[in-house]
Length: 149
Image 1 (cartoon, rainbow, N blue to C red):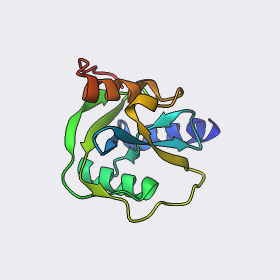
Image 2 (cartoon, helix red, strand yellow; image 1 turned 135 degrees about the vertical axis):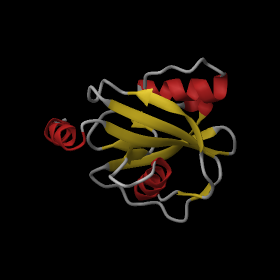
Image 3 (cartoon, rainbow, N blue to C red; image 1 turned 45 degrees about the vertical axis):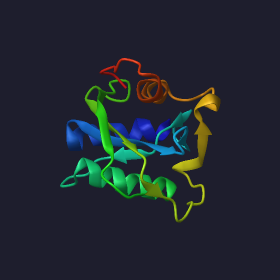
Image 4 (tube, rainbow, N blue to C red; image 1 turned 90 degrees about the vertical axis):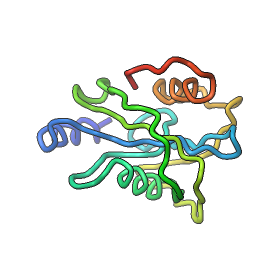
């Protein structure tokens, strides 16, 4: 939480609005890849911030590969844009679904990503983030989309 306390004010001053890209990496139609960070609790989808002069898809591909070793092979499907005002008052997340990919390497755990794992839909972790749980219900159960992460 100390990292969040120190970094978010810097991002807020530098960017004004923060924009992230995350992806649901689907394996075999019913397993999803999730990551556990070193700086916040729970399980989340891989992804991260969009940098200056970087497209959403380029940021997504870069972040997913850095965090998990997954190389996305096609243009992933954009599921939607979500407001994430819990993190900062002007944060938004572009959320994609990727089903054509390969994972030629699995990065060692580090200070940012402590763990990564594929979870069957029937065995999602108890501490899945609320936003990730909502996206799973939208993609696999036909739940109505929410504008909020």
